[in-house]
Image (cartoon, rainbow, N blue to C red; front, side, top):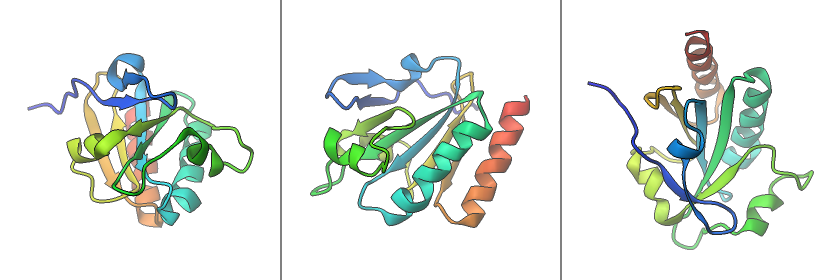
Length: 145
């Protein structure tokens, strides 16, 4: 049994539908499902995602803002969490939290590590030290293959 992912459908910041599995085909993906209202996401997880992108140049970090009732994203409020005003990696919007549900997320942030073959390698919840350590170990083992 394999955890092959056929598609992950989101919209870009201009509202255009994108299938991440097609856009980033044959790349190691680290997806972070987050919400701007989650302080662990904006305070720890987003900076960690940026650090991981720097530490593991072979991976592609992608942010997915999960929209929940009353907590939907706009291009402006997504950009507002970055002090530089620059978004350090691609960010998409998960309308009606469909991707969040697709991967049975435990909350935000939920990290999805997807192999170059399109298989779900790890799903890790959280932004605390133990989740960060699990992410590093998973990335190291996947990148070395």
